[in-house]
Image (cartoon, rainbow, N blue to C red):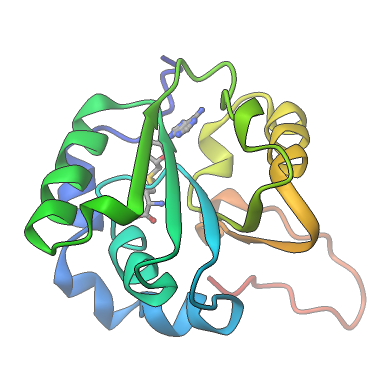
Length: 163
Ligand SMILES: C[S@@+](CC[C@H](N)C(=O)[O-])C[C@H]1O[C@@H](n2cnc3c(N)ncnc32)[C@H](O)[C@@H]1O
């Protein structure tokens, strides 16, 4: 596993309800989600976005979660079971070299990559793999912590990124 992957114990902090003071998952994702959708979530951690998305897509929807850390996935599944949402969530543990999502080609309505792109060394491959999963007209929602984003100094453009 690449060394810059977020340690598993940080997953507990990221999934803490206190994070809602900074990030409101429903507000962030709901403009892009409808009932019945299939979502690909790369690097879900312990499910801070997964569970709200599973509620928003309803009983006919699915959230496909791909992570490199078993402890993240195990905790996500425990939380999903407690919330009664386990049947809407499919998890997959990958090696980190590939998302291994060939079987989801053209099946995804939304891909969410929240605070994960900077942890993946081959980002070109990451986006190539994500793109193969998307249905025509689907969206990718990407968010990165500000410290991991370099903004070009273009006149008139905001210099500080918004997280
Ligand atoms: C900083 S955490 C963000 C977790 C979650 N997206 C959130 O915002 O709460 C990054 C997550 O990406 C996962 N990750 C790192 N490299 C990955 C890769 N190559 N493929 C899939 N997941 C990866 C980590 O194990 C971790 O769960």
